[in-house]
Amino acid sequence: MNSFFLGLSKALAIVGGFVLSVLIILIVASIIGRETGLGAVTGDYEIVEAGMAFCIFAFLPYAQMTGAHATVDIFTNSLGNKTQAWLIAIIEVVFAIVLVIIAVQLLGGFQSKLRSGQTTLLLQFPVWWGYAAAFAAAVVGGVVGVWHALVKVTEAATGKTIAVEGGEV
Image (cartoon, rainbow, N blue to C red; front, top):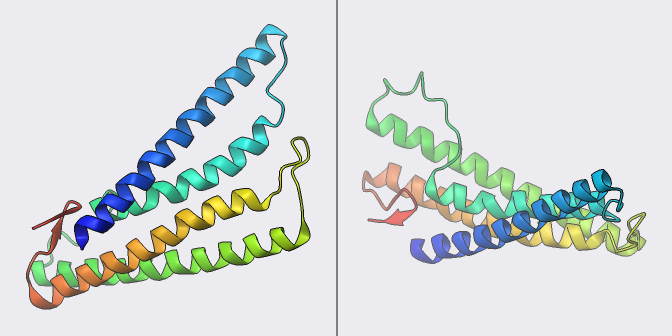
């Protein structure tokens, strides 16, 4: 099961990387256009805003599954293995709860923007498109976060390693 969530997270991160690459190309083209007098790409800020929201949530599940989040373990290095395992499990549970709350809040924002029919200023595309993309990635993040928290709680309770660096034992 862990392999499924790792694969899902990796696929979403790859899509996020592709979107980020497109956004970078768009920004470079817009800057070159401004500097050469050809003019900026119309709506570049609007596209980057919506795209970056998606990218952030697209990378979170893979970072969660691989343990790539930044940690400050200066005080916890001296703790025993069992205590560290429970501390990691608690942190993972809290992080999973936060991811689910974020997904629920994005759903509310998505529904609000969908009902209002709000569009962006320059391109006039519906604002809910960006919310929908971010929400979809946040749902994957929430599901992966809950799975990873369950894995870490199980590891702490049993003392057995189930997942290491995003893989299965």
